[in-house]
Length: 274
Image (cartoon, rainbow, N blue to C red; front, side, top):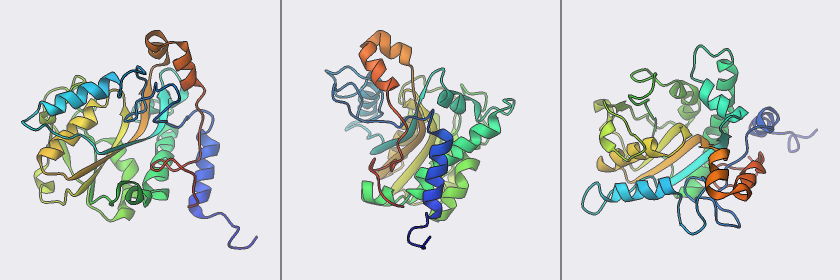
C-alpha cells in the first residue's frame, strides 16, 4: 500500500472509535424535518418554539442578569446522545465513579470522544467559529455533586489532547451553592492565577448536558470577566426518551431512537478527510 493510501493516525483513531462505540453512541443533531430539535442543544422541543424550554428559559435568565443582559455561549457542540437507561448514559454516569468496576472502560470511551473533537478535528474549531481558542477549561463539580471540591477527572482525561493546542488552561472554582437548572454566574469564579489570561475565545469542556444550566452559568461568569467568544464542547447530551414520548409524542421519541453513529466532524457536522 502506498503512503497516500495508508490511513493516517487520525483516520485510524476515527475508525477505532467507530468500531468501539458505533453501536451505542448516536450523534447529536441540531434540526429535524418536523422542527422538534432544539438548534442550540439538540434536545427535544415543541415544534412551535424556536428553542427547547430549558434553553429558552436560560436565555431569558441571562438577559435579566444586568441591564442589557449577558450573552451565553456562542457555539455549543456535542459528542453523542446519552439516552437514560442505555449504554452511553451508563458511560457518562460511571466514568467518574471510582467504585464502578467498568470505570476504566468508560474512561476509554471518554478519551475517544475527546480525541475526536479536541485532537483529530481541533483545527475545525477555527474554521467553524472564525477563530481558535485562546484558553480552555473544564467545569468543576458543584456543591450538589459528591465530587464537589475534588479535581474533576475529566480534566485529566482531556488535558493530554489540549496540551497539543499550546493554549493555557483556565482554572475555575465552584463556590458554595447550587445551580438548580438556573443561570447563576455567582456559583463559579475565575481562580486568581487565571485572571490575567487571554479570554478572547474560551473553550469550555463539559462531560454531560441535561439542561445546560451548569456550563452556561460558567459562560455567564466568563462574560462578566470580559470573555469575547465562548465555545462549549460537551461529551454527551442527556435525553430521556420516556419523557419525550410523554411530552411530545411517540413519533418524536422514535425519531431520536432511530439516530445512529456517524463518522463526521463534531464541529462542522460534515464528513472530511483528516
